Length: 149
Image 1 (spheres, one colour):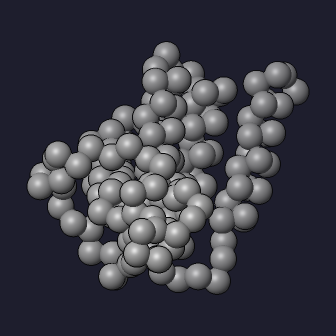
Image 2 (cartoon, rainbow, N blue to C red):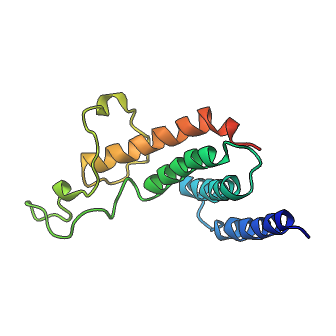
Image 3 (cartoon, helix red, strand yellow):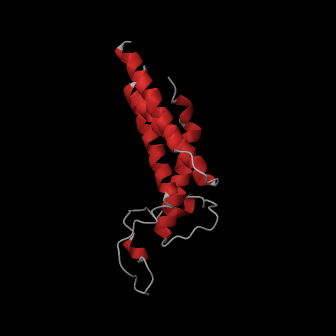
């Protein structure tokens, strides 16, 4: 068995472990995103290490962005990314302590994701979720057709 065959075998075994780890008993949209994330992680690893095409690392970078968008969506735009402490009105957390920079000037161009009435502590968190949702589907619609070997 040559080196490439051994690498392919290792990749297949790793991919199967990733895929089986993604299964759960949850049946909402997060279930679909967890499966999609597992598939994208496998594709990224393949494009970085085993792909024949020259643009493999470039496509892996695009896939990495899609994975990060899924991570933002799964954490509801950063639900746990606030500094500790109570806000000025005694609520937790303080909406002004959101740890991520979010460009609020273009919020009128970002369509609101119909997320079932999730609770957001700040407008920045909600906009971060909406941007990630829109960008993920835009990447998948326009770029994913190129991610082949």
